[in-house]
Length: 226
Image 1 (cartoon, rainbow, N blue to C red):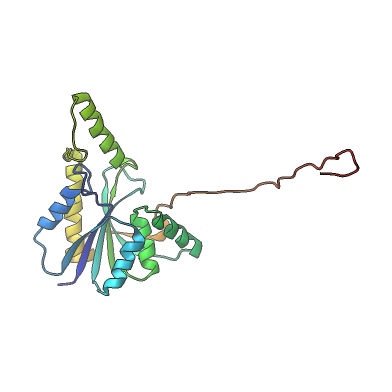
Image 2 (tube, rainbow, N blue to C red):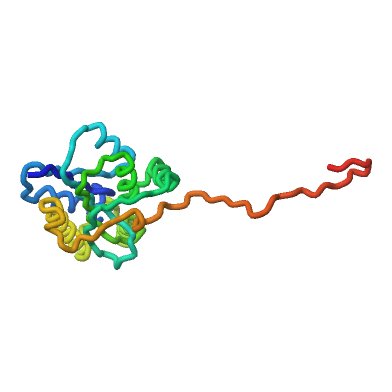
């Protein structure tokens, strides 16, 4: 049996109602996996994750990374991609490294940085779910509002999965299992994922000077200018 790592990127153990939360982890861990399958929480920066893989010295035949992305699909869509990579300009890689060290957890940044440092096996799959950009914050705010309306205190993150999120979790588990156990043969609908298809990192700061700033020189009345 090949050695396989399954990692949830952006896993939130304290929000039950989130599709990448503890319900997904519990479902994956409860699956009847053969020997050689590891399930990991990858809920920290891409730099640290890549360094951890480097330091371990372990080699794997296949990896499956699960995460939320924005590819412009319908909300709730789940798909499987096979990482095909591609060349990026050094500055483009550096922008993702910069975003990573600021603490941003991103599947796309992890893919690029891991490829840059050569930690990925030949078979790298992503199981991607299209969620709203503010999915987690909207969920938390909704729980606060319910508690406020009910006039009682509550624990944020205890709200159970909605029926829609249950369907998402079911779909993630099914596709992850097929990709982990059988690779591309188990997922005929798998699509390639290249660097050109990745979501661009956020522009934290962008400055542009369009004209030179000039201060008019004026006479001080004594034949001198200032």
